[in-house]
Image (cartoon, rainbow, N blue to C red; front, side, top):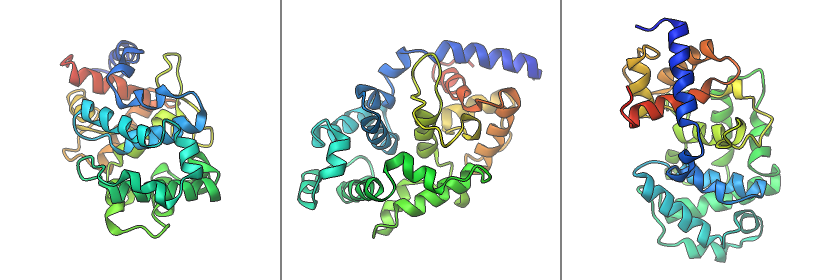
Length: 256
């Protein structure tokens, strides 16, 4: 078992190794990186994160297809599209995310931009610095699903208060909130601090974390997310989720 200083040295080294621009080329984060406008980045990133389960090439392919259907101008499309415009998404499917889900997401985003000044504004609306981010995600999920959604749309949005890892939402927030010199994460939102973020746990980061003794819980759920993040905060309290790169990269590249 590594000591805390040894663990920090290892994680910092792996972070520097994997937190570089080449990461963008094979990751769904390349979708928002294809835009320069802040709101285009936020909307395209939200859809890329929503579709981020399964094989990466398929995630990227289907995310690009959504951007094509939005005329490569997601912010303008969300603001100005009509119900008729949403019909062009009929037939779109990514695993269990079907065209009805997609149409609801488009409509709900339009409502968020009309009523809460967009994605960032809607998160700011429900976020309270005195609350844990798990409560923020729970409240934001309720808000997003409040525009006459069907039951099935909720299954694509994890709820920490129901012990979900909420991996895709946490990954999206990592993209939007934290920023570093490598320019992978955007750091566009200021209402949530990097120190408040939680690790977007998946099988790869969980595997590395257990090998390193950062995670003892055997089930991948919110309790595991909380345990791992708390241990990472002991190593870097201001930016604990930067080690997502180290944990994920170590497992995928069989460095551990």
